[in-house]
Image 1 (spheres, rainbow, N blue to C red):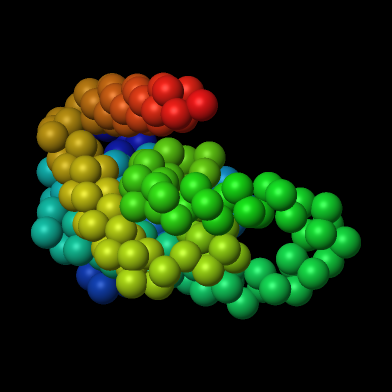
Image 2: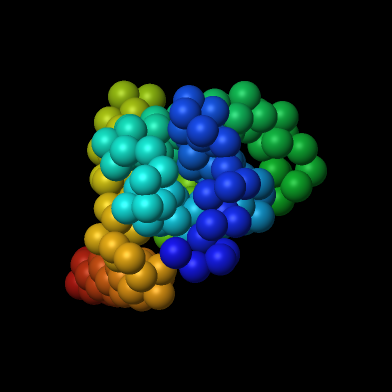
Length: 201
């Protein structure tokens, strides 16, 4: 076992406290601004990798990762709904009224897809649920999309780390390739949306 891995295992807490830490990481990554400073996906891949080395069970890591991710999205939505009205009536909000209307229209038409891609795309992970709250996206649709995307995210990233097996380099490589695949799917979806709009105009 490499020295850095021994140090990580020695530093981390055990049992339920360790699982709570994983859930907190997944939760924080979904919060606007906070999520930009938390490398949640990388840390959750690491948690899956550590399972191979005897740290926790894969099932428990998947469960708490999914729970933390879903809870974070719900909290971001609540923040948007709670802070949305004061923000919209501020001087900044009045200036951005047209952008808000476009965002509301987009989320109404593509809310599920937006939330799914945001969950797997770091820079907008915490922003889309927050905007969904501001624009008052249908809570039932939001919850359904959040639950599905959080479960898939909770399966994917610990699973990638676990599949990396004995090599952290392999786990990192798998994570990078998965990220590229998601980015490619996002580009294809946006291009398809652009073609549809162009054909209607």
